[in-house]
Length: 426
Image 1 (cartoon, rainbow, N blue to C red):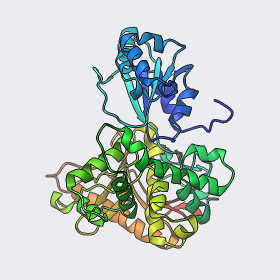
Image 2 (cartoon, rainbow, N blue to C red):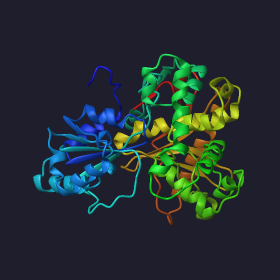
Image 3 (cartoon, rainbow, N blue to C red):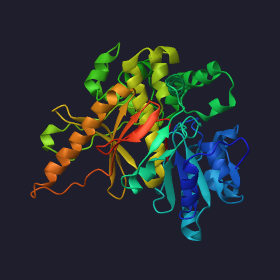
Image 4 (tube, helix red, strand yellow):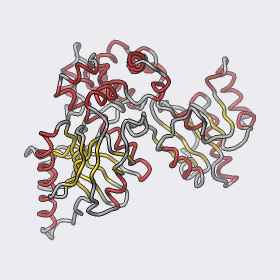
């Protein structure tokens, strides 16, 4: 690895996939570090955006793509959508050479391009997020998320050095790798502000040829920020806008943010604990990084500290981001639970082998008890449901966790783990 490269958790996954598949496609938002990480795993590279005449590059990629693919392997094709014909040629090469680890793609937006084949079985996709607190060094990683699943009744005792003040700053700064090169806090906070500005002035117009309104996009970003980590319905989000729009228009603009990998909503979990009618499966509204919401709200780290309710929402967003980063290597997926009776669980982390964790996010120590109570109540309902032989059995949660912004971590007598976000790692 390069001297100035900050190792990423996804590095291990990329290495593993390059030993299995002919190519790996790294998707994720701009500025999250995809190109730099891909460079660390490649021996040569093609950067389509470095060409002054992109139309000529596209013609070459269509008529004689092998010229552009010459170079030591793995060869990086950065932002491959700018020369989409290369996808088909690389898939063909992978299919006929039957050798793993030949190419690496990066993709910052899911632009609609014509490709003859999807790449299934030859090109593996992996998603990259902004840097987690462990990757920035703000979490000591003394508690492994994977170990909580693998070691039954694991005893822990940990201490976090991440103060609430520093956590507030980390939420406002975000996980953008470029911040590590900057010295002043003011400069680091400016990165997220610039990113946010470019979403509605530049990036939204590069997704496709549809003409859209940047002012409306900015309004939707602010509305989404105000409803971060909530189950706000689309009707509520539309009503929150300064000017009315149709459902179709709102869906179109939200879809653009999803194609830019900026909106990363959390779906509802439907285990039928009481009855299917009792569950709400609407998505929880989340950005891929909390800094986008902070900029949308126009608040500073100090203001965030003094607005507990907003800080709770932003804290939940950064926790979900980090859980996705930590669990990506073992195929973790995130959902939430909420029913009409008022019972809810902030996060349900599922592994591909059927195991899952029930997780609550609580900023302060005063809320830990209520968080643990929610987790134990859902576990009780699962036990109750499993007594009914008419319904398929639902396994008990492998682990119950309350993630906090407090200093000390431990295992409660009821089996619930209390873990500071400043101690959590992969």
